[in-house]
Image 1 (cartoon, rainbow, N blue to C red):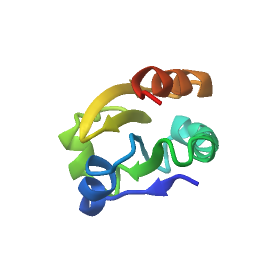
Image 2 (cartoon, helix red, strand yellow):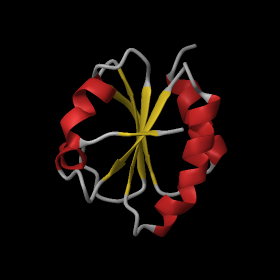
Image 3 (spheres, rainbow, N blue to C red):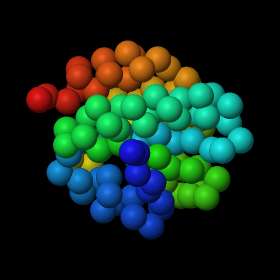
Length: 107
């Protein structure tokens, strides 16, 4: 299951994580975000131990999305060692997300 992160623990949970981290920036009122939700959960299960997958509610946590220039949701950002590896905006397919992870994260 995808974890939840907040402004208060973003640095420790994402930027300082030993694993690559995929962050789903979303909001409950966003239709495409809700449609992407089950895909994010599936990926969290598939990548257990390889990639940490978390969600951040942009309404409850305004600082971090602002810091990373999130202007539209859903936005997925892939981090590794505190650096942004890749980013995609919109309700993309599961295969697109898997491609992004496999191309950017060496196994």
